[in-house]
Length: 304
Image 1: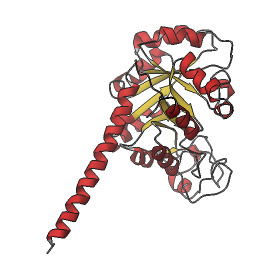
Image 2 (image 1 turned 180 degrees about the vertical axis):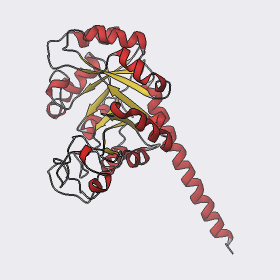
Image 3 (image 1 turned 45 degrees about the vertical axis):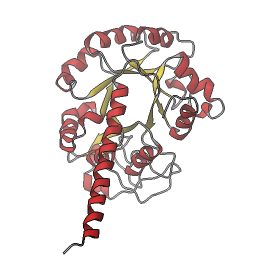
Image 4 (image 1 turned 90 degrees about the vertical axis):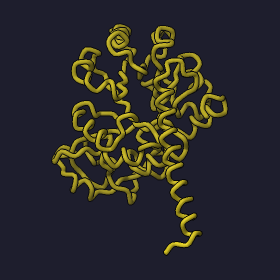
């Protein structure tokens, strides 16, 4: 028979558990609300493939955990399908670069892939294994939003897992298909998930593509990519989309944001992160250096 002290301890533990769950769910709701607010004035941080510059391999559960721990808002993950129909998290279509194995994911079973170990950023083997999409979603659930890349080709299967795990409301899908194609292929999902178009601003029809997206889909955000630092369209679209959609820029490498990168931000954050935020109106930045970006944003009042 439990003593009063044991009962009190159990009650306190349960209260702590439910409070933690409530606060986590509240955190995701706040991020989603910010993402859906076209007038949002701070900056959301997206960690590319998880926080892989830590000891965690890219697209691993540990990389998701690390991003959550440091206060990142969104984690970007890549999805591929195995030979026996399972969805796993990996950037490349082969396991060669990121594991101690060889072969195409589409020609391997989940059991075969699960036998492999992931490599860290320096190519050294770790104890971590390749996670399934379901495992990744459950690790992120209630703690961080998830941007799924490379998932549009088998989205019905992805959506089934989202429903199963109760994670539909924390997902951002993205793609470069024309607005009409997105409406046709994904229209029945667009009331539940956030779909973000990717637009390459160096292409001749970029501005027309943006106009079509706004007309047909009214996206919460656009992922804008451009390599030509002299391109004036980013400035034009900042004004054109003001109060309609948030702007997402990538600081991963030179060709994505006119040469404004994480590596250059190490030397001059104002000229890189600051330029994207203040001059181009970026309110979402995807980075390979989340700690650097978060530190800069918090210092300048752009992130809590």
